[in-house]
Length: 313
Image (cartoon, helix red, strand yellow):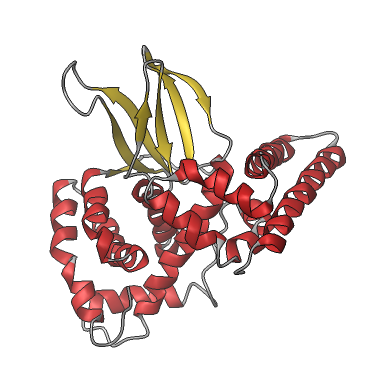
């Protein structure tokens, strides 16, 4: 969706009443409401009017919870609980969802935008084909990744897919896109002074394009893949529309090597795990760093193979 001087004010004003209503229903403080004033139109621009109802439904159904204490290790997260409807009621399974903000009292406007955009972007990209099940297991999708439960005990996790880190890398990139859309609003003559005050604060806290600090190492390793003009549009479309089971076959078909997508995602998950261990390690740090470097090189080899075989880069 394109914006220009002719439609910018209409677009920003269009979702004010909606934001006021959900903010009043959920008792959101004013700074949360003002973050949503900016993010909701940015999400619509990012994904297009085709997905407007789905995006508005996501922000309406999923409540933001503010915790009373800060957590330096986790600033925010998207949480869901798998539940089962009574026999004969459809859908058979559903999820109870929320976005939780741990760092709130000391957060700057740009940090609030990043945290809320990042977690709601997970949510938006999990709306379609969220749940799949058979007579033994039920799986819940978060973007690219699945968590699988035992149908007889929904508190028992039977497994997690190996693409959690790639999900975060894609989500970080899209979060940056959304915040840069918000930044682009300031290029136009906007009539709402509250918006202009926010734009002023954002512009004086960022130099150049916005780059998130989340999953920095993993995003750095995959920077060429994320810039690829075939990879990103394809994976974004499949993820948004819940067709993630097609991704591995498509990726492997480009590289020409069966299993290359699974190898890529497993390596990325391993690098994240090794990085977390490294931050806590007292001894053998060089050994752990070398293990990370070895896995990084293997990831880059797979990405290079994809790049070499990709027609439109």
